[in-house]
Length: 346
Ligand SMILES: [Zn+2]
Image (tube, rainbow, N blue to C red):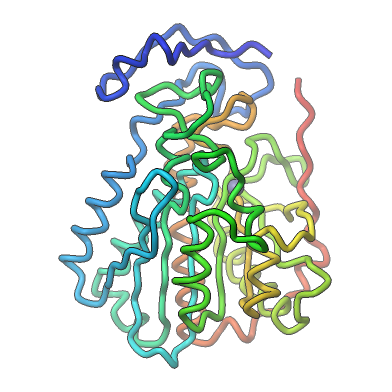
């Protein structure tokens, strides 16, 4: 595969500058139609960690119902944040988690949009019936490319690269049993063990070329698949999945497949369901913000609908829990929803 050459060492002196480094774009083979090869994948349009923190503080100052808390620090010392809307601890509670994988940032962009949305008047009554917890960007070191390994072959352009791994190259979404890294420790000790959480959506991005029924998907979903997960917990996860599916599919741009996922409890979707009895749902958005494999990355023309997809999903989940309609959800669609398949490269 031909890849755009990004010379990070040359660009090193410009890292602090916001000036985008324009290099000739060599078309990557086998990317989805929205990547196209004519589109530059730019990281500059994404919130940096610092911009995200500024946004959260600004919203915290504006929104009466919102509380902002630091739950720990990343390996490189970045504060990890929890956004809380807790009207009554006895109300049902949902947690949204984004960017365990640092190169999967549109989920965070969507979560920040959603935080703004929660501050609007029309959400006030909804928040009288449901508690909402949001942990945006659990892996800020990976998101900022501030890691102890080289990212020279990553393809996005801009003043930083984004990587899946934390600063020491660990995959946080394989650390939910051992909880070895400060990021996963913070999530478990100061969120999962501290609040009574009923539901969780773990937001990720997948490659850009998966399809269902011959059409590229906008994302994929999956419930806990560990054999140790309680049947009732899994059933409620499937109901949460039904809420999301019914909200996304009719949009016109939304098309979801069933994610092909493992049963390891080191994965959040499984481990968190087993350890805490939380009904979890994995929601994977199409295409990553940066990667060294071209077909995993998606161009910025898709940013709008993918951010929208996060906002629509989170809004639907919160409303369905608030009005109790989640309990009426039929889970039988899961039996006929096909697993997504990887489109063969041309
Ligand atoms: Zn991920």
